[in-house]
Image (cartoon, rainbow, N blue to C red):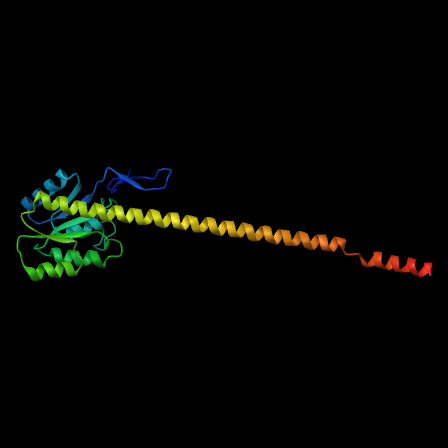
Amino acid sequence: MAVGEVMRMEVPAGGDLTVSSPELHVLAVDDSVVDRKVIERLLKISSCKVTTVESGTRALQYLGLDGNTGASDLKDLKVNLIVTDYSMPGLTGYDLLKKIKESSTFREIPVVIMSSENILTRIEQCLKEGAEDFLLKPVKLADVKRIKQLIMRNEAEDCKTLSHSNKRKLGEEVVDTSSSSSSSSSSSSSHDDDDSYVKDFPSSKRMKSESENFSSFL
């Protein structure tokens, strides 16, 4: 299994998708060393893989969104969730959120904003821009577990949707193949009937010969 994959998936003979050993890879962004250590510990307790960076700019580098294709040697890892502080020098958590949602590659990754300030307009602004949730510091283990359950549920639903879509597509291909075979068989049968008709129809030479024999008889 590749590092950073969300989960291991098994498709039994019946075709129903089952999910085992769920694991999220989380990118945690915070300029505070203490807060970064706290969120990292809570995520690891919740059985998540964690990568921590100290700024929004470093997060963009990690994701390869800074315009430098070789900026991060870790960007091949699959990131399932981004947790970022709101108030950071330079690129804020809100700015990071907007850049992620503007990316065609990463816009589907859930982003959770953290802040020690309970400012309603700020919370509404982040949620409007596509944030999955807004957590007030200090972040608690219950907060992390709730977010993880939400993300895992979304991941499982996406996997089920993909599985059903693939099965439907396969069924359509089988129908198309069956229709093509039936059409080919019908066409072949038609040609056989035509050949039989040509064989049964008397040739011009044979008709001429029979005509001459009839004349001589007269």
